[in-house]
Structures are given as structure tokens and as C-alpha cells.
Length: 118
Image 1 (cartoon, one colour):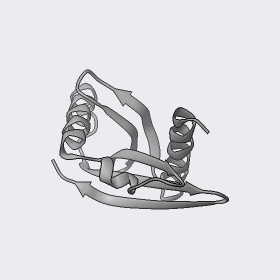
Image 2 (tube, one colour):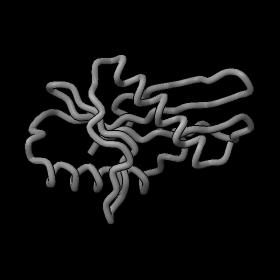
Image 3 (tube, rainbow, N blue to C red):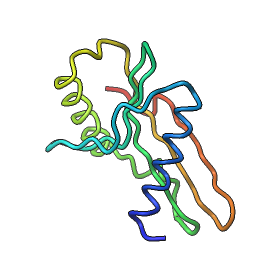
């Protein structure tokens, strides 16, 4: 599985997880000049910006380790751009990292809520 396909696979698992938790998918792969957000999900009182990290077997470190301060700043900038374009979202927000690790015939999924703050 190439990197793009693996990433799309992880994003589909993350979307399914959030749907099961009662969230609606508001946007996927939201891009601006400043950065990108993999998923934006919402419930009635909460908007969540999700960074999805998918790894296959043999990865040296968990996906969450690649969400550096620089990456966080880009995600936050993209989130601010989204909120500026969509003022109807006047609610609480948070930033999650959704980690998918695929090994042989198993898949491990971990949702890290409030992974970082503005």
C-alpha cells in the first residue's frame, strides 16, 4: 500500500470512529495557504480539528510523534482560517490526533483528545 492510499485508509477509519461517537463530518482535507486539517468533525456544541497519522508495520515511532510544534502551528492556522470562513461555528473547539497503526492483519487505533491547545 503506497503512502497516499495508507493515509486515506487511516482517514476513513478516523471518520468512522467519530461518526460512531455522534459527530458529523464537516470537512475532510481542508487546505489553506497556512496549513491543512485532515478532518473537521462537529457535534452540537463542539468542533474538533483532527490530524490523522497512519503508520504501517516497521515504523520507528508512533504517528503522534510527527505532530511537531511546527505542524501544530500549521493545523491551528488552518483551523483559524476555517473559523474565519465559517462564523456560524460559535462553539467550543479542540484539536485531536487520531493514530492508526497497521501491522500484518491487525489495526490499532488510538484517539488522543486535546492533543494540543491553541
